[in-house]
Image (cartoon, rainbow, N blue to C red; front, side, top):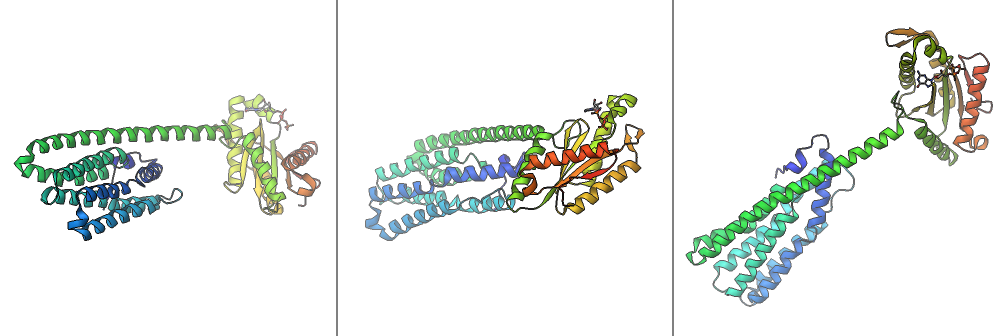
Length: 381
Ligand SMILES: Nc1nc2c(ncn2[C@@H]2O[C@H](COP(=O)(O)OP(=O)(O)OP(=O)(O)O)[C@@H](O)[C@H]2O)c(=O)[nH]1
């Protein structure tokens, strides 16, 4: 069964998230509702003494409702946000969900047509049908099409029987009006559900945006110092617990003040963005983590062999010195000093210890004449 529903299909960018919500909400709302039919049938069968004149049907219908209730309960949604799995679940659920109302509808028609059922049994069955249809219209606002199918299955065969018998004309009219009311209620509850999804989605997007902004340097769009420090601590803790080895690189542009003084602050800004771009290319994410630590200083966390990290750092420094930066149409000859070191739990204890050691190496690179890569004194590179 092809199941499309506006609650899922309208928000293009967020379709998977919406689908996941619809799946979770539909299951939560309906997992126990299947047993209502078993309850209804038990009451109707007892009042109508079905076990006396149709014992097999009494048991068979009861077992069928029980089985459908258990089936619904056991159809747990897929764990996680796998879009294909959620689509599959919805397809399967679209087949399972109408089965109980279809069976109840058959029972309802039987009760209306079979003269062995008395008036009070018919009344109880009718009330149950109204109840199930009302529940369907409100509970399955997550899936408008499916809810409409359920309400239609419950009401239309009963209405056909009522309209075909002039004795039931008044009831048929009343039930027809109630069906119209249910259609309106279904549309309204579906619209409310969609609004709630839209609101949830907007809140999630805002939260993600704030998180992203709180991690990002506004000028260069690379990570900021706060995020970098947290990741450095994390990497140091992993490495200390036997996790992968990593290196820390700190780069400071040489005589950056002169760039600002000679070309202006705007060109200085463009120069910082260009350096960040070059660093990003030399140390690509997501393996490496690049951040602007402040001013004209950048940091990179580099996983893997420290000798490789040092070699890449040296290549970067050499290329930067040889190939001037393009900043807003101007070619700027820039050099940088770099401190680099691999984390060693015995020597550095934590991320902060490594940071201090690499900062000292950077200081040494500056004092030895700049434009050089200086390993930490305790580094094993
Ligand atoms: N354009 C621009 N300049 C900045 C920014 N942040 C810091 N600076 C400038 O960077 C310069 C850093 O100067 P210093 O700390 O003296 O260092 P330096 O001139 O690079 O000299 P050395 O580091 O010793 O080689 C200052 O002129 C700051 O104004 C920024 O966001 N944009």
